[in-house]
Length: 119
Image 1 (cartoon, rainbow, N blue to C red):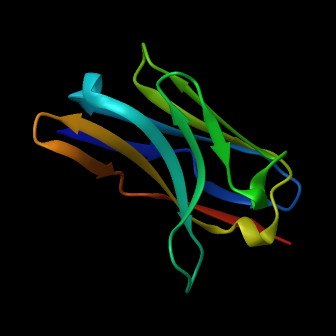
Image 2 (tube, helix red, strand yellow; image 1 turned 60 degrees about the vertical axis):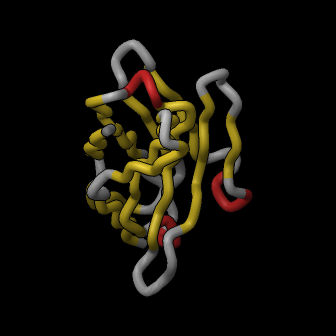
């Protein structure tokens, strides 16, 4: 199993920056992909950015140019650097790991960290 703990959220003014972190523990060697998702108030959870073990990265169109995903495999930590925050970025941000086991693929989720952007 993989446990994920996010941190770094908070209240920030529009135009500001934040760096979110996600610390992974447990069977981290079995992780083959990690992502950030977010869930705005009253809306469904949506993917924000994904990074594979080989370094491949995909961003949602809405965050391209402002969000940067990175991963320190040695430290088992995933990051999301966010610049020029906008009120529409207000959401709970979740860390996700796709885990490969002998029984197949599994998803692990963190508890989420709240990001609130004031205008």
